Amino acid sequence: MAGLIKFGLGEDLEKYRDIDEDAILSSLTEEELEQLNADLDPDNDLLPVGLRQHDQTKKAPTGKFDREHLLKYLEKAAREHKDREDLIPFTGERKGKVYVPKEVKDEDEGDEPILDPELEEALKEASDGELCDLAAILGMHTLMSNDQYYASLASGEIANKEGFMSVVKCTAYPQVQSEPPNTTDPHESLTKLQDNDSDLTELNLNNIKNIAIPTLQDICSSLATNTNLKFLSMSSTRSNDKVAQALAEGLKENTTLERLNIESNFISSDGMKQIMQAVVNHPTLTEIRIANQRHSLGNSCEMAIANMLRKNRVVLKFGYSFEFPGPRDSTDHSLTRNNDLVRRRRLGLPTEDLEEEEDQE
Image 1 (cartoon, rainbow, N blue to C red):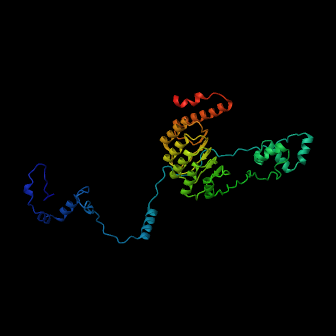
Image 2: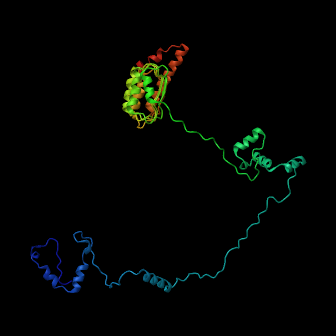
Image 3: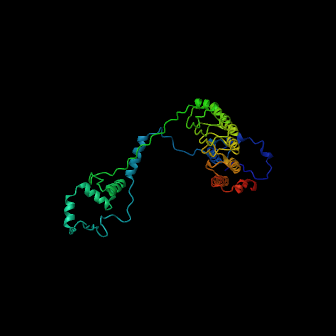
């Protein structure tokens, strides 16, 4: 193209700094300007988006979009378009053999079975219920449920009395009623615990949601001075680490509690360690349940629980599902040892080897 200057690599470009670009562009013809615009690089990031590609549309605008006009044009073009000719024209001739369905013989056709006169007479006089019951006994179990089938075999009476048109129904199981709410008064129980009431030997606070945390702390702290309570259950009472700390302090002084249930609460691993440290030297506590806490206790807490139970010689039952096999095996061994100690003491057998097991470990 005349008038265009091509620059080579390594050439002296100082002489081109004072070139008047406007004068060069004014001297170009319309064809040269169009060719110059077409030579723009669409991938040049230095150019605006609208200038990276030249508008090469030469058709004049036809106006606004008319949907109805477009549909009519497409329909007209489709009708005027010739269909493609088939390579093999269709003549309507059918090839192959004509399908002829096979004749199915009726299984019921033929001679009727010959029965004994007494059996045939009994079947003629039997009702629909008796025939249905007999068919079910012979293996047609869709005529009655399993309960009806075994009931007819056991009692000898007809279980299905509606006949062959009856519908097999599922067994109606009795509705299980929901457990009644816990009616224990926490404040009254706290007063009895603090007074060391001899009639209060079991305290069940399970599923009472509205017990305040300070009240639960006072109940746990009162164990230090109480000598009559044997069983304390605080499952699903929203107990947290503050309650666990008060329970640990109470267990350190308590000498009569035998069973403890603190399942389904919000006690963390730190609170559980404090409780188990108090359980190690407790003289009478034989059953502990701590499962289903809000947070996982973790490996370190489970190892601490296993180590504390290894030092204990009284706990016989421990309600908790261990997550790790090491603490689980150690706890199983400790509980087995404690139960063996009880058995030997009951039979008058020596227990020195089990008593000294901790020193050997």
